[in-house]
Amino acid sequence: MSGSKDLDCENAIEKYRRRRRELEVEEEQRQKVGQTAEHSEEDTYLPLKQRRQERLDELRQRLRVGGGRQLQSDVSDQDGNSDHEVGQSDRGNIDRDAALGPRSNMSLLDQMAALRKKQILSEKTEEERQREQEQALLEAIARRKQLAPASELAKGVVYTQPMSTTWRPLSRHRALTAEEAIARRRLWHIIVEGEDVPPPLLTFRSMRFPTPILDYLRDKGIMQPSAIQMQGLPVALSGRDMIGIASTGTGKTMAFSLPLVMQALEEECRMPLVQGEGPVGLVVCPSRELARQTHEGLMALAGALEAGGFPELRSVLAIGGISMQEQAHTLSKGVHMVVATPGRLQDMLRRGRINLDMCRYMCMDEADRMVDVGFEDEVRDIISYFKRQRQTVLFSATMPRKIQDFARSALVKPVVVNVSRAGAANMDIIQGVEYVKPEMRVAYLLECLQKTAPPVVVFAENKHDVDDILEYLLLKGVEAVAVHGGKDQEEREYAMRSFRAGKKDVLVATDVASKGLDFPEIKHVINFDLPREIENYTHRIGRTGRAGRTGVATTFINMNSSEHEQRMLQAAQRREDVVKPTKTIDALI
Image 1: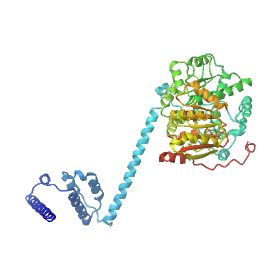
Image 2: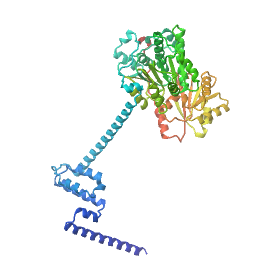
Image 3: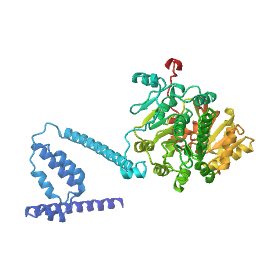
């Protein structure tokens, strides 16, 4: 049977070959009698491989005759239109009629290699050109969506100079040369960008704060400014727009609170606020807890000034979960400072409960989260209510792209003060990783809590995990509380208050508690899971290792953790060697 099948196959192949030869003979006869190429193409189909071979033979023939000049255009036509060459005989005739250049000294292989190199370079250039076009488009969109009041946009008002203030450093500090200022910044690892940056000042007294403020700071144990305060306070006090980048726990809150209090005090001394006026300054925070903490800090500074014989400075906390009537009553007396979350502030502005006619200072704490997807529209709406030029100050531990775009559209000649690698973790934090099976994490958590003494913060990505962890810890007799977005304001305040007072040993929270909250005594932070973004990891572990103390951060991962999560953890754990200053403060003043 196999022999007969082979015979049939050979007969079929031979029959096909005979038919093929007959078609070739017929084709030659048609060409001899002068049939057109168009007629021939309609009746005869040439395989693509054969057409390419004929074209290559033609190119080789032309090279031998003496030209390599047309090679690039011919090959590019062949690459881009190989599937459409049938029916383009006119184009081929034009190419064949073109004048041939002098004989090339390069071989065909060398010319093909050179051609390929040029094509690769042209492709890269095209990609770069496309990226430049996309960047220009994004910048155009950012300019069109500028963060400015509607009245200014309508009139085309553009501020080119920063605001001026009455604050001036002492004459001996104004006399510092640029080299001396650079030496100070290098000593304290301060990086600045901008024009006419004030020199860093190494003591609070040299910043010319009132005596009650100096006494208050001394009573709090703050004897000298941190790096962000050394450079950030002179910049903010001089009225410059600023972006402050610093690791968590380095005194960022004081760096924007003191300039706000001083502006409010100056306004009150010049002309006391009456009913319905104010605020002079505004602080916008991403979470209620951070807003409450900032408000309490401002009230403490204002109380110290009042106790020292200065006028009373009033502050209002505008956050969800608090009666708006109570807030409106305080506002009706005239208020100097407002600390708010974006949603509540936007609501009060729309209702006319508050106005920004006198506001000349705006700070956005944790600005990376503020300009994020969830808050960007609210921030744009809030800024549209300003009636005059303002000083804008942004503070954050990270510097994502959105912050850069925001600064480009909202700030006037900003000064960037960077005292840490943006997105990096604090150097005073010992970071560890524990490989734990997902089903064993809750049980292992109890063992992990015994590494350090309380207080301890446990972070989890979702609310259900927070509730499960809290229930387990309570069953095991651990004094714990929990905070997440699903709890009402009263529960959240109780949890924060009891944890801060030391009545509870463990705080279990989602990322709502990772932004800016200051718990100086925290010894240990445990990441029950990894957050989606490296910035959130930095904020989480930044709850420990604050104010020069050493803290511990433990992160649970398992074999199912994605490669992205592991790479993110490695990037966040990179440390840089920091050389402590060898000179004393007194020697530099």
